[in-house]
Image 1 (cartoon, rainbow, N blue to C red):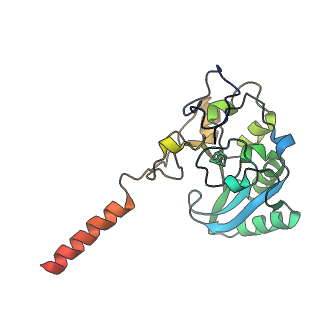
Image 2 (image 1 turned 90 degrees about the vertical axis):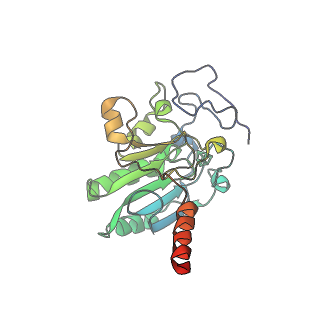
Image 3 (image 1 turned 180 degrees about the horizontal axis):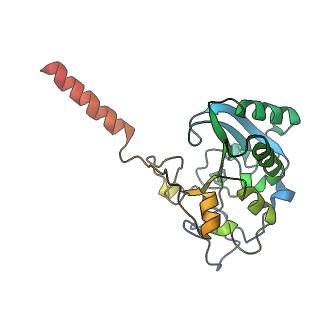
Length: 232
Ligand code: SF4
């Protein structure tokens, strides 16, 4: 879906944007989660291993105005999609997180940075009850540089300060790469948020480990080796 570059001519928005009309590029502060969020949740999945390091609980919030071409979650671009975030769901999330084998929670969407009315209080509660014994990951369509622009709404920074790891940037179909760890396109980065805030620039997560070769290739090599052993 073609988007609009609302911030045409603006510089310093980091890699991957503007994105040749494939994704919307908002001006600083143009999209305000305190207004846009309808406190709706598309899905909650406890005990998953695909949304970050370790066993995690994943909360999918509804609503994303980036409208990237090829987005896997286009059905939840609408801020009213899904069901309301309830106290009962929050109690379940806290109880699931308390399991000793759970490493943390992941916020996905939809756009977490535009669902701050749900996620800031939840992240605060997690810090209150678990300290830093549980980590918090979030995906976002914004780049780090966009989030740091003067004029961005303060709730985004509030949420960032509660997050440990941020996967940033739009999904760009042309830069799709299936070997990337936890991300879909090469422009996206996995960032260490406290280190980035301290350094005043994006700092890549120290445990970044992209795959060097496709899984099918490895499988084929193993199979070929097995076949030659059988033949000999
Ligand atoms: S930012 Fe993410 S959720 Fe939003 S449209 Fe792009 S890929 Fe989809």
